[in-house]
Length: 371
Image (cartoon, rainbow, N blue to C red; front, top):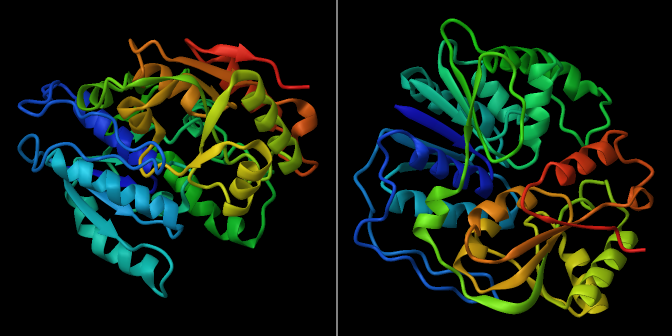
């Protein structure tokens, strides 16, 4: 049995891509045509045909449910798609309740011991790291959780501790208590004689010796959705760089306004972590229609309608959208983050990491930061 742990909609999407890319997995959707576009204003899409598309497989997906409503909503929609594919999905209320973590560990323990391969979406997650301490000689696959995969592989290759790129590296009491868990999880993520480690990614990475890298080409997404209807003008993709403390909110709003004006953008696809206050301000000050997608943007874009140009700041989508939209003629453009946009408290690594995200993107147009 393969056992996957996901905490975000993108992670679940990439688990489906991984399962589809495995040797022997069906590569086409038998008897169910690709679906037409959904409704643009709400971002909602109609799920493809009723019932499983193929027989149930040896993959069980465990959703370690987050607490924020947008992530939960997108995850429930993605769980429907996974069940339509014939996979078992277990929804685990792992947070927000007294005793939830201990209950989760107790309930998932037997499944962990039976699994032959563990698939995870976020090696930086304290929850996932804690689960990894319960397994020993299990094969492991790490699927994309966005650009964080690039940082994870680099840290693994250089023997560094696992720290998210936007953290400043300060060690508080919580980090000190969890340090042994992180250390042991990192050992579990290192290949050995009895453990194979695979990274399934659409990101440009240089793996350490012994780690297998499998390319994620979004074949499942392209086979199940689209092709999209392409509209005139441009769409703009939002980012949570303000919410993570990297970019100044005033600078961000001004940059969005300048991009929309220059490129004729009419819609703004919000990141699921963007605050309602910031989105309201964007709508008022830029005139953009704010769209809250209920599925990952790769699926929304593939279903359409989508602008002939998609504008983005440095983020995961500058790597994934060219793959998901391959052959459609849609152009993806990425706008650099100017050093003056960064907040005083931003991580010293932020500028270099964001520049790397942009610089390594393929099949995209580079745009200078608006003055």
